[in-house]
Length: 629
Image (tube, rainbow, N blue to C red; front, top):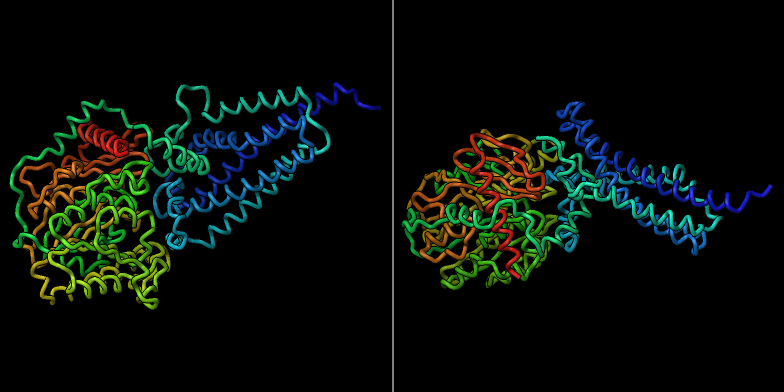
């Protein structure tokens, strides 16, 4: 007997609605599985959480999973709405094509996140997309991770998702019956209701990362994030952050007073370290030189023996910090004295970067010949446009080295780049300023030497890459000392940023402090003093004003740093990361999450004064970035 028309119409509408509910639950389940994969991969950190905390990772994270699933369901909901006029088989095929494409994207994000977290200590977001402009360098950066394992994870996860969709979800959408008018209206209403899980509920504030943060354990909070949601939110946030300042927790006037007091110039004459008024300056920016590999700072012994011995031959800054966590941020902090910002990189907006002060530009105006040396592709992370704005007279990149010297996946290894600088110096006009950026200690940590630290694990390769970089820098310093220009030259060695590896804790400070702390060493015949330790707290943003003050040159334009050698000057270090900042001074240190609006790490007696100081620096530095249109 034929089913009544109204019964069939009712069945079509209900079936389509059930399909959408199943689709939403399907993606929620797949995202929960992806989180389980992450926790299994990071099993050492997961084991330290305990069963209770691990349960809450899932319990809090499911809110973001549901939001991401709701986003994914919008397109099928629209197809179901259009099923009133679009042939049913076409609707089913379109949804299937969309779903399988989305599965591939989610699988790649899930697998890529594993390597990203190991290298950067944060979940995957929009940051790696910047580096896709230079794919060779981007691939070299991730190659140190377990590429085969991650590829296997992506493949297996994608297959599981595809099979689950075909068996449990696709079968609920028939390709025979047209949608009814009532069914389209019902599907449209259901699609509109997706806005509730998308924004995380009916509360006033929409879902953000802090909505799923629940613990003082940084790993637990990171594990609660949904990676596809995090990537999409990061892309949208970076676009929005070019227009508005979200860091307004402290009022503007109070922030200004705080920053003015922190960075006030006392007018006192800085302690003089030079015996030459205008020495040549060689700035060696050492890739990933974390304090954790420098023995005098409590790091692993035997990694940088040449640097360790040079500490007694120069001026050593032993409470120095990286201002950011990536090379592009470190270069801007070192050369422009501008603090890195959460979610945005100044170097990626050349119009704003061009408005920053720059050490090379100021030294050029003072009569210095300027040059920049790097063994890799200068277009990487927009470095080239930034350097050209800095009026460097001469740029040396990967293409300047013969083929047989380009034996690193990034380009030419450190020994060749340092050797090129050594050969070029005699022909340089005096005085000269030459900046050199090393690359051998970057991922994938493959260097042309027999390993000193046994093992093929990532930590051992990281340590060996610094052994090689240390040998290269040590050989350069030995050869430079024999040159006639050494006596009138200052050499500054500093890292571009710290690194999560090796995973050890330094004697004092928070976990974040250990990741951010780096050495800075001044050497050369131009120094009037030797074997001196400067224990004032400082960061990369302080390098330019400190150096220019020693040269007797104006430095007020570097408003976010201070001269570390001025008597009775401020002693603090400020650094930022993806969602907040760290602040270190003599009282202690703290790490503040700007999304959750709370301190997540603390050491010593750091408290309200350090928190307010960091909030003031964050607000005003971000506003300065916005004003540089």
